[in-house]
Length: 162
Picture (tube, helix red, strand yellow):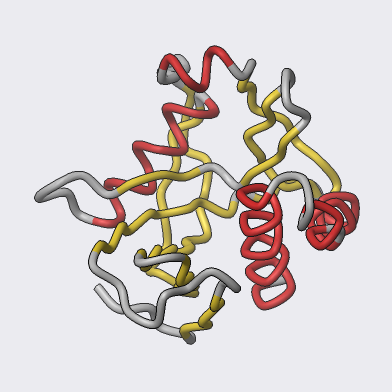
């Protein structure tokens, strides 16, 4: 599946110039009453758009729906892919595909051990507030490169889509 709008490339400072590994993730944009559904790690204070890795043989729409359900407890119906952000770090290419989602029901959380250990929980946040949080991505350049990159990616996605 290719995205229907556009692809954006983010090149990390540590990019080696070529990649040997690629990982694809599908992320769900769920909006209700001016708020965005997010996954929040209460122990790290880190926010993220719900989503995660595509499993072998899995359809991208199914991946998006599965990941949103696992992380938030909400059953969603994803749209076609509306944006792809490709990130290049070290010798990796990280493909992130974004889908608008409509909530159709509820289920139980199904967090990984890492997510449980970080205190992950679903939270709704006003769109302007999360854009402001993600816009501060450069503040993490010296202390948390993973968060810096993730916040830059999510800020770029939301500015493009909203």
